[in-house]
Image 1 (cartoon, rainbow, N blue to C red):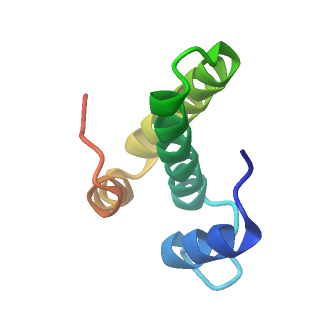
Image 2 (cartoon, helix red, strand yellow):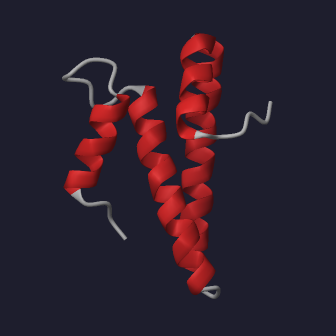
Length: 91
């Protein structure tokens, strides 16, 4: 299920580094986290939807790669993003 544009704008404005920012790592991770949350709820109801489960795994690994990149390049931004999103640090 696709995210609606109003929700995307809301997430983008909350995590953007400047007003015209739409593609920074923080925004991408926040959008992916929202999609992960939505798909997780979907899979709790539809346990046999294996194609969505595969998509969820791809999204989770993409978020993991972005977070590890941010951790290597700018640790303070990484820590603040983890706190804002409420994600657990696993490494």
